[in-house]
Image (cartoon, rainbow, N blue to C red; front, side, top):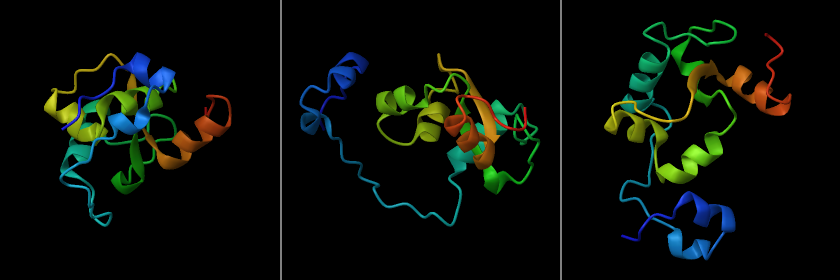
Amino acid sequence: MKTPPTYEQWLKKERLEDFIIKSAHSTRNNKVMRKSTIECINHFSKGKNICNCCGEDNILFLTISHKNNDGWVHRKMVHGSLSDYLVKNNFKTKFEIVIECYNCNLSRERNGGKCPHG
């Protein structure tokens, strides 16, 4: 397995083809939520399992969101499932993570960091 790149290497885009890491478990069943995703939602919502913005409580609509819009950096550093990584590391991270529904998450991205709800 190849060594994962550092954050600085990703920013410089140094020979990205050398950093492609293939997962042994590349197929996913999209009809079932991953156990680690559910654990992350439960942990980061402090057991409430609701959207931090609008209060949506259907767990199928909830997702892990980065409050400072730095999720792309976090995902580049993890190389795989973010939720698996967070569970494996006992939810310790230097990133500020919140639970939002997909609508609020996407609307924050498209509206300069502000959700129309709040």
